[in-house]
Structures are given as C-alpha cells and as structure tokens.
Image 1: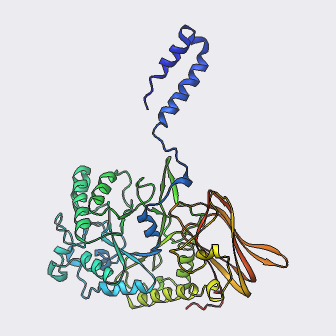
Image 2 (image 1 turned 90 degrees about the vertical axis):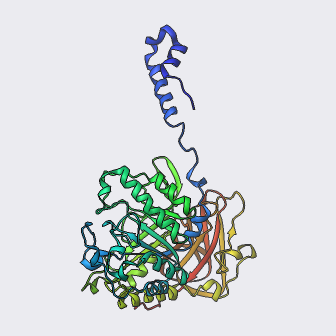
Length: 473
C-alpha cells in the first residue's frame, strides 16, 4: 500500500486555511499513520486459522519424550558450562532399544533426543567440531548416538526428532554471531539430512538473553531437508514456529486451550506442548535421586491436565551413566501407561450399547478417524446418547475435528434426571481432546450440548468412562 506524506493531504484539502483547522489535520495525520502501520497486518480472524496436515498429525501423537544424556550425566549436574573433558562421556552399556521399549510402554508415540545441549557437546560425530562423541573413549570415538536412537525409535514404531541448542557455552564462535550462525546451520544440516524423517525440531531460548538468532535462516535450512518437521519454540523466541511452549515445566495446561495464538498481531495455529521431567525438577540423571521419581498418580494427573486439555505431553526421561534407563524409571513408565489404558479403555457408550441417532454415529464409534458434523452454518448443536439402563460415570472424553479449525467456544455435558436436564460440566475450548472429570453420576440419558460455535462444529468422539474404582499403584 502506497501513502503520500500526511502533510500533502492536509495542504491539498485545506490549503491556506491549514492553521485554522489544525486539530482536524492532526487527526487526519494520526489516522493515515495508523493505516500505514497496519497496511501489512493480518485481517483474518482467529477462528478462520486452520492447521496444516502436519500439525493435525502431530496433535494425534499426544505423548512424546525428550531424552537428556550427555556429559552432565557423568558430572551430576543439569547445566554444563562447556568445559567438561569429552573423556568423561564413557557409558559402558548404551541400550537405545531399551529406552524406546520403555517409553513405548508408557503410551509414547515420538521421541526427541537432545543431540546438543547448552554445553556444546555433540552426540553425533559432527564434522564442525571435535567437541563431542568422536573425542570420547565411548566406542573408541566411533559412536553415533543420534543414529542409534533414531534407528531404535523407528524399530519400535516411534517417530523421532532432535533438539539442537541455540546456546553453546563451549564453541568460541558463539561470541561472533555471524560465525556461529554459520556453524549452527552446518550442524543443523548434518542432523536434518542424515537421520531420516524428523517429526519435531525442538528449540528453546535458555541462556540466550540479549542474543538474536537468525531463526528465519535456521528454519529455511531445516525445511530444505525436512519439509514436514514441526518446529517447537516459545512464542517469545520465534514468531513462526509450528508448536508452542505451555509456559511452565509442570506438564499442566492451566488455561482454556485455544490452538491459535496471537503473537503481536500475527495469528498462527500453534498447538501447545507441555514438557515435564519424569523425575521432579531433573532433566538429566543424578545419583542417589530415587526420591525424585514422580508417582503414578502425579503422572496420571499430568496426563489429564495436558492431553486432557487439548495439549501434548512431553515427558523428560534420562539414561544413567551406564547408558540405560534406570530399572525404577522403566517400571514407572509401564505403570503410567497401564494406568492410562485402564482409565480410558472401557468406553461406556460402546460397551453399554448406548443408542444414538444414526446421524451422530460417527461421533460415538470409538474411531477418531470419523467425525460427526453439526448442521451447516449452525452455531449450536446437541449430541445425545441414550442407554438401555442407567450407567454410572465420572468423566467424559470429547475430541473436536480440527482440520477445519477450532470452532467450539462453549459447551456443557448434561444428564437427564427427575424430568429435566442437569448440567454437570460447563467449559469453553475442547480442541484436540478434552477430558472432564467430576463426581460420579448415574443417568440413562446424557448429552453433549454445544452452546456456542463459530460455525458448524465437528466432533470426532464423545465418550463416557467410570473410572472412580480404578486403583492406581
């Protein structure tokens, strides 16, 4: 959009009377300045923003792990300063297959390996530096942990991704932004071109206060080799990433979860990933640290407050100095997976043969690949299920079909009792998956009442569970 200087318009319209209508001219100058400032801004509404096919597929993964294993593992610390001797990295019994089998038992569908943490130590034999596994005694300097982990992930049916820390406390080039950007891009090219398809590329801004990275070039380079990779970054770090951080490391989504985020006037579909370690406050393994292992109940609560609020759960796991996940961690991961399967494997709508109108069948068939659509152009709708006899339940699970965007703004779950409908849940966003938990209720008729939708809503699943009697370890 081309605009002449505002003074031109004032002189053109008012000529010699400029001074007598100063206030009018000032208002015109302000209006034209605002118009010019917003000429390139988005005019689309948040409800019109839709996800990419890759984002839809990523949200269906629901649970991932991020794996921390480096020199910190052998030095009993969380943050390396870049001075550790590569010789300290010498695990005796690396078993990446054990890692992946253990996390798969927890219901995990993708694994992200921290290929380089803030200390700059690389877990692959990078041609750009000697500071990494190729200078360690592990496998006589011939090891490649990224290769091993990626191969094991895929062999166990898991997707794979990497984390390459922007902050590097070892490499002297970090002091020269131009030189370091070239170094970082070269390492990124190695990871993006040599280890198969990457589901996620993980970024964070730790230690980077005051530093500006060329993220546009970083993502351009990544996309050259990995056009389908989802880029995770905090909204404060990078404006155009595909995924966003929840804001804490608790694993909880503490707010109504809308997938579209407004970043300084720029609207983008950026689903939430909520990261939290399996051991409280610890991302790397530490000796004599058994008390930090989270309980099954804590992990289940985290699942309900992340995946159950339309987000993604990213669980941190850490191999020990031998290169294996500790036996207690392996057992806890399986207990967590077993608990989630026990809680959400008996859908009463299906198992108790609920009756539903044929038009709604796709929303109650236990198949998230099908969905029911409300009448075209509608802004509210009701989906009712009727049981042959009263059933007791204490939670509902609802999934919205998001390919066309997130449309449900307010909804309720209601039961028919004593001649009228009683509301037991009222909330706003549903998104990918919403789990609502309440005191057990008994009813024969239950309905999902979509109170307000931006256009016709789409429901993949509406499920009921009675899990108040499930005993967690």
